Image 1 (tube, rainbow, N blue to C red):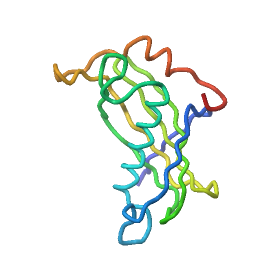
Image 2 (cartoon, one colour; image 1 turned 135 degrees about the vertical axis):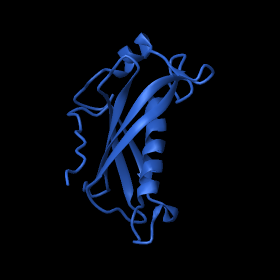
Image 3 (spheres, rainbow, N blue to C red; image 1 turned 180 degrees about the vertical axis):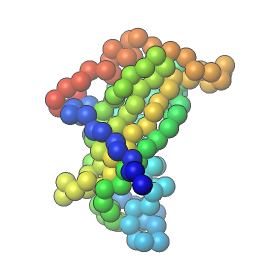
Image 4 (cartoon, rainbow, N blue to C red; image 1 turned 90 degrees about the vertical axis):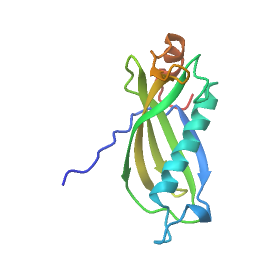
Amino acid sequence: MPRIHVAIPAYTQFEATIPVRITDLNYGAHLGNDALLSILHEARIQLLRHFGYSELAFGGVGLIMADVAIAYKGESFYGDILTVKMAFDDFSRYGFDITYQVLNQDGKEVARAKTGMLCFDYKARKLVSLPGEVKAKIETKTGGIL
C-alpha cells in the first residue's frame, strides 16, 4: 500500500515550540493522532499571528482547512518539547498549503504534515480569492526563519 508523502520545503518561515501534555497521550502512552492535529492547529495559529493574521482575519477574508495529510515518523511522549517548523507553499488562486515538520527536543522527526488552506467568506459561505497583499507577504521564501 502506498504511503502518504509530505514534502518539506528547504525553507522555514516560522517555528513554534509546543510541549506534549499528559492529555495528548493515547492508550499506547504516546502522542495520539488527534492530539497531533490539535498541536498542528496551535502551531498554525502562532504562524498566522507571526505574520499579523488569524484564521478569521486574513487580509479581509477568513481561512478554512480543505484537507490535511499527516505522515508519522516516530513516537512522542509526555514531557517532550516539540518544535514545529512551518512554511507556506503551493499557492493557488484561492489558497495555499502550510507544511509542518515536527521534531522532538532531540531533533528526532515525529511527523510531517500539510494542511490545504482556502480563503473563505464566512458570511457568504463561499470561497474567495487569496488577497494579493497577503500572498506577497507570506510567499517570501528564505533559507532561515523570517
